[in-house]
Length: 269
Image 1 (cartoon, rainbow, N blue to C red):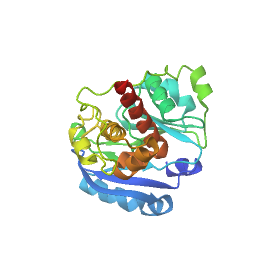
Image 2 (cartoon, helix red, strand yellow):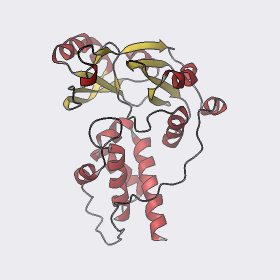
Image 3 (cartoon, rainbow, N blue to C red):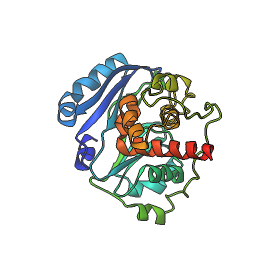
């Protein structure tokens, strides 16, 4: 599994360990692939003994967008397996496919997920093959994450996916969240909004434990743009504040800031 990502330009991963309830017990934001490969056997052994989930997030591959299609049924998998370089069975009858797309921006990645019927909030973090899926509902026979299929170095272009019906129509710009504060122009540039407050106020995630970090990121950008910060500065600050933005990289941060800008501008007209 690590070799597949390495062949596509990935050189490091974020490593997370969670308990059966989904609570994070350990996190390393930047683990070199060479180090991870050496230490992986020990990590898996300790995780098994303590019933911990081993989750990795590949950090940006050069010139490629890695698209995670999560929570796929067998019929959904049939549509995308021919374009995937990696397919995992993460729980009984539940699959996850990874695509390496040459010319996809953040908006295009969302359209691919929608067309495939995949979880739109999937963050790019995945259980590593060979580890166990420790969730109470699977006890005592916990599912072991398995490699379903591999296609080393397989890449695709957006046009191929579009021809196969795996590119949904472009979505209209999002409207402001119902709980968003009234937009104001008089805040001082010197003060950023509190990301911790944005995260605390975010709704619960639909497909995993904890808060919806995409919503928190969007709210942070919305408030920052409203206070007068330029889009690129907001994107850079989001990379500082948000763990998810750091993992997904600059394209995600800039796309989120630009979406927020469109909402702020629409509410000011």
